[in-house]
Each structure stands twice: as C-alpha cells, then as structure tokens.
Length: 96
Length: 144
Image (cartoon, rainbow over all chains, first blue to last red):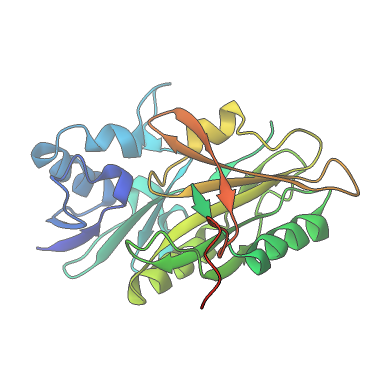
C-alpha cells in the first residue's frame, strides 16, 4: 500500500530535504506513525498529544486528495492505496 | 532586501484599505529561486478579524498547488495590522511557516498614510529589511 505524502518546505528537514515521501496506513493516524518511524520528530509537528486526546495540530492543514482532512474524520480519516496526503502549515498571524 | 515594484506595493495597500478594519492578507508569487515578486494573489482572511488572519485552508491548497504547477513560490506573504504598527507580533512570528518568504506588514491605523515594512522571519528570529522599488539603484551615467 503506497500513499504519497507531500511535505512543505518547513518540514523537509525531517525528510532529508524530500518534497514527497511514501508511507502506508489504514488511517491518517497510522500513516503519521509510519512516517515517524522513518522521519523521527515529524509526528510531533503534525499531532498534538497533550491534554489526553491526540488531534491534528490546529495550525497545520492536512489534505487527503482534494479535501481538508478535518472534514473526513481528522486522524481517523480512512486511507487507501494511491491516495495523496498534502501537508501545508497554515498561513496565519495578526496583531493579537 | 525586498525588491517590490510600485504597482505591487500599491495593490497591497489597496487591499489592506479595502478590508480595514479587518486584517487583509495575501501572497505575491514569483518564479522559484528568483526572489522576484510578480503575481499578486489577495487571499480571503478566513478569520475576518481586526486582530488575526488565517488563509482559508482550501484556498491555500489551490494557490499552493497552482504555484507548484507554475514553478513559483510565495516570495511575499503580506498582511495588515489595523490599529498597531507594521511590525511582526509574537503571533506573526510563531506562525511564520515559509522561511524563504519576505513578510510584508502594512499598517492601516492612519487613514491617510499606510506604513509598509518588510521582514524575514526564520526560526523565530525577525530581521527587518529595506524595500526598494524596481529600478531604484545607484545613479547611472547618462548614455553618450
């Protein structure tokens, strides 16, 4: 099972500079765990584990094919062979 | 240093004025590796707030994919502060996620005069930089 994962510039330090890596998993959580085994530290940039329940970090956008994974079950989103997962850190800020 | 052609600087200010008192935000894309801002892309502020901005996540995906297809990158990421100075806040610094971009801040706190300043934000460190309009430079000798 192969899922293409597109990595944003700011996280390429974890993947040795690679813009795209491959992983596998039945859910997004599984895929992230799989990636973290080869690219240690990557999971912590994507998942917030504090406070008891793990969830995707608020200011990281993760997309499954063409949709925001927040609407597909977040970490529980089911994946299939051939899917593409894209990670884009949110562009945000402000005076506050 | 950021080289920002006059019309692009004017477009940033116009966008900020139009969205005031909410913060405006957007990108200016340019050819990858060129450091030249060329293509102005105003973005929706999904927060619609006078003190916070965030790109809509689907709009961001579309724009980032488009830049990728065109071999471009986000050369400038701009946003406005509507009541404070054109300087990166702690929030701006903590969310800066494009280490190669010039972060342009506009302040619309004064109704007559917009402040426009540019910064690099890398690993939590802010460095202000000069903005020059394209074509500025040392005096050239007149042609013979």
